[in-house]
Image (cartoon, rainbow, N blue to C red):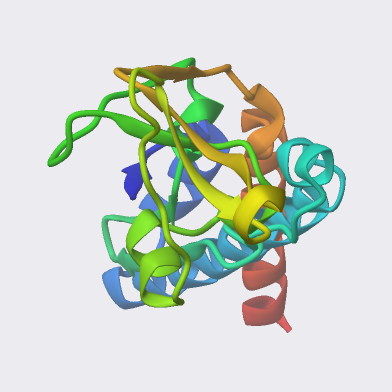
Length: 192
């Protein structure tokens, strides 16, 4: 899981913020952080509806990684921070190379039963997972006796590169516009 930060420069907000007392500034930043959090959360849910190509290709159920992304907001009188935590979220900033950490290879699912599940999970579920001699994949068997056949579950890889997905997060322009709208709403409510 990786957290990413995207800085949004809003000179219009900076001018408004400087004119407020520190306590009002903290409240303004809290409102902006809440708006941006909802903007990001809604965007991720909409994006996920149409971006399950691997799950669809394998006939698997989507993992819900983006729909369940953790979006946290923090703010004080000096500013606001919204943090997005989800597997692969850094693809929004550029291609993402993945390498195995504690294992000798990555396991890339090629079967519906393996999608979104670890080898350990499958083994704990009673599925015999093995590496056929001389092959670069993990498999299981289906059927019994002479009818048994080897079914590949995972391709083994030393690394994989996930392509850049710039639309994974809202644009800087959309985030800035929503931040400005939240600030205007806050100021207008305070004026009323």
